[in-house]
Length: 255
Image (cartoon, rainbow, N blue to C red; front, top):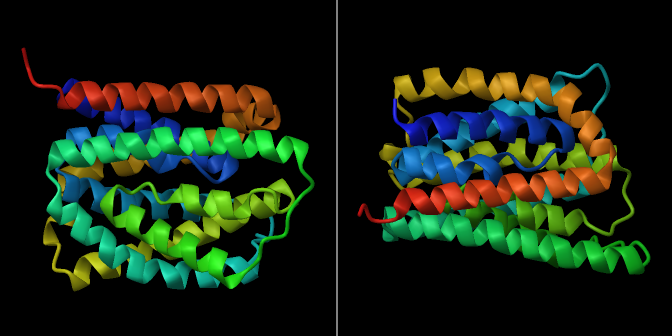
């Protein structure tokens, strides 16, 4: 087993734990390394399956009734389908290095946007952007990112930011949207004949248990970290930057 594959496995555990704790972060943490360890098509297919696994464990594995923002979930998921078809075209058009750089750029852009939005939210009253246009844009952008780089979470996160929703509602809304994205992404890959996205049995055997372990661990260890917002944000930023650095190193030409 290569060093990159081992690092990708560790990233899957860490990403699943973060996703379980706050409803966001799985693909951003592990996508760069999975794209480095696998072909782009297989990485996308694997991330769709692992994301569905983690989100189902998060939403249905707790002894409470989920409370997502229902007016947001269905429109965002439906608008993701046309975006997903466009994302497949990007996936097929770019080579391994270009996709790795696209994933990296997406992570860095997300960090920048979230930092700016967080700073603005600290000085502004909560907003209530529930327009159909905002939901459509978030859905299409997420769909395109899901089937090209598997990092479709940021547009939905940004849609829900500054809405004044309780943290549990935001977490459940993100999780419900991600569950809906999985069949949409799978349908887009199937309609475009992207058979290379079907993960190999050995790949599933390695990463599926790791994702489950991370999701279960996230209910305890990362829940405490997430409760302290400042510490969580710093820790998440460091993990993402480390994943970006590792992904970039993996595509550098050998000396």
